[in-house]
Amino acid sequence: MGLHIVRRVRDNLHGSIDVSELEDAVIAHPFFQRLRRVRQLAFLHYVFPGATHTRFEHSLGVMHLAARAWEKLQTNQERLRHTVSNIQDFKTFEEAADKTEKHGRLWPTFAMMDQIFQSDYSLQTFRLAALLHDVGHPAFSHSGEHFMPSWVDVKEANPDLPDYLTEYLDNKIEELKAKGQDPTQIKVRHEIYSILLIDKIIRGVYEKNPQIRLVIDPRDIIAMINPAITPSPGSPLLASQTAHLLRELISGELDIDRMDYLLRDSRECGVVYGQFDVDRILDSLGLYFDDSNQQIHVAIHLSGLAAFEDYLRARYSMYLQLYFHKSAVAAEAMMRHLCNALGDWRLPAKIENYAAIDEYNIGNALWVASEKLPKEKQEETRVLVADLLYNRRLWKRVYEATAPKNKPATEAMEKVITLLSKQNVTFQEISSENSLTRFQPRGNNSRSRNYLRLIKKDEQQLHRICAIEDYSTLIASNDSVAIRRIYASEDQKHSLTAIKAMITEGLQKKPE
Image 1 (tube, rainbow, N blue to C red):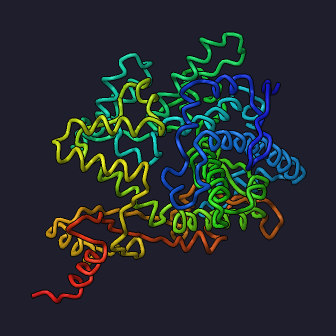
Image 2: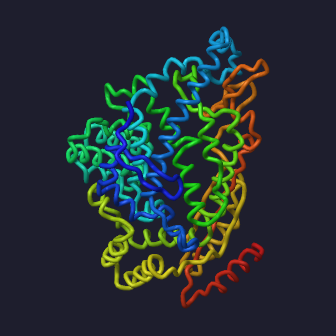
Image 3: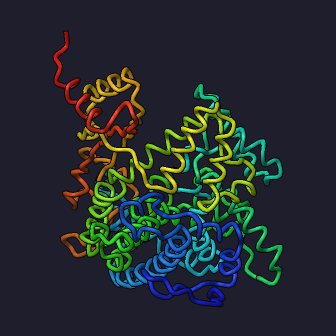
């Protein structure tokens, strides 16, 4: 038992990262190596010069945290099994709990532990899902998604997909049609290219490296990332319920993806907002069984609740102070305007051609795309590309409205938009919302609606599964904020000072 570790990579955040034989071949694949040329934080290095780290090292870090989370889940649950096995009638005690207080049970998880944790297949699949979860990101990460192809384009450009992926695309296209949306116009997200690339990478690795003995079905990796795709028929993941359980650790409320990028982004940018005790959180991981859906889910022991709250604060603070920094979002506004200026231009839909575009060559691709525009628009667009990608001449924030998410500031914002449009000012509105958590509030005498639960001792010193929101005022408060900004471009007709004065005067003017 155990994965065949062939080398170790030295990471500036986590230290040594073990790499298995299969992972080594995956990392060497050109589609994964491309992540070296996709920065983690897109244009944020314009503000924080150290923020030049890439999706490549982040992906390695998430894989490392996946291995640690797996180990801690196994160790912690085994310790808990040993503890409660000495308590007479613990199983009966759990079953007799009042329905409104019954948020899950520990006992059923103990019989399933061997099925889950004694499988090299499940562990390797989990590590690969963590490693490859971001492989489909376009150049400039989320900012680059403005240029993504449509659902129909993706389907038509890739006729050689395996049946399960073709079926998935067909279903999504039909869902869009049923909602009255046009799948030829709706763009896919980067997650779609992640699953398409995962299938290509894994199949290519085995073709090139037939000596690798542990054979992982790419569909099983994808099932840990995308809940709409089930594990392959006969997969070991089906019997152990592993796919949905480990998916919670990759993209749930307590997920290793965010754990890595918060710590890594904070470190590389030279700020402290993203710091939290990741070791304490991992040390407190546990499992519980939910009778309502007959599935195992992730829980956290009370000893790790404070560290988990720090993690939530870090995520919230990083959003406000870093990810939505005014200058970084200025670049996002310019990218959105560039997408509108280029009209129908999109990233290539064919998988291999999509993967050929990165941050080293997208500038040239955008330059070539501008050749189809009228001469006047062509020059204007090329100046925009140069300002954004090479010269750091960013648009300026000319208006901002911040309010609670449930009370968005709209009246003044719409007035400013109307005013700037009438004066032919080149501008772009950018909006964003963020909450401390994604937890749903619990009604009186009702079970928790959140999968992440708390393991704690009751007054009789017996371990119970509780609603985590009942023991955290931070989670119960669930503060949120909505930020709307307008960024504008200076030109010969409209200086920044003139634009701001125009807005101030317009807002102060009383309606006639």
